[in-house]
Length: 296
Image 1 (cartoon, rainbow, N blue to C red):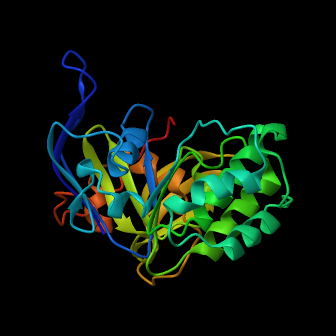
Image 2 (cartoon, rainbow, N blue to C red; image 1 turned 180 degrees about the vertical axis):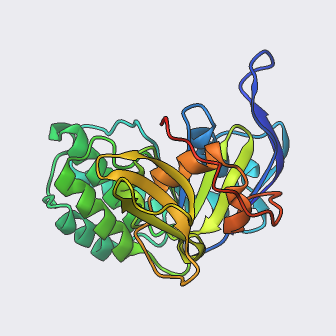
């Protein structure tokens, strides 16, 4: 669905490049997490995908069409929920009436379902909502728009704990095989159970590009007490329980994915990408147990 082909991008001639010769493919029917440190270009990448920014070289294509051309046929099938936004001081019904013509697959039924799951009234006034309520109302409209590509930048920022659980349920209920959702976030624990694909960025490079199922087939994420055996451990760091570890998983038993631990491990032990089989340019060298960071 999405093809990013050898792009270069920077903000102004005198500023450093955000992306250099950067390529990525994202297929349909995925909820893809876009992870990385501050300043790695996650938000920039979402704006490039939506056609609001244009690369200086290369192309960003959605279903084979360059989004920089801003063709109505593509734009009506893409929706971006930025981290920060403002809504007009009107009722939700008025907002829907003004904006739904841009999205031919807009669903009133889906909007009502999302509002219900978010515990929001259908007759709400956008100008009278808290920031968290505005985010839930806007995300409800975004999901109801029925676009094939939905981009979300830090969607759980500003949500309380119950609302984060609601968010995961709402997104899962709205997912179809034809839709792709890309979520850029630092709050990995809010979304890691929702994701089925992960892309981790470090500078202009891809640390990891892999389905979560493939990660969990070859790696085990565990908490081990102090003194427990570490012979099978690929990475470890201190935790309240003793040691948070990533270990080999020869039996393929499933453990909950810990994306924060995995990101720290990939920064400290790049050869781990080869073990997972999802990193760009990774060879088949298995990482050694000595590649651990005990000071994070």
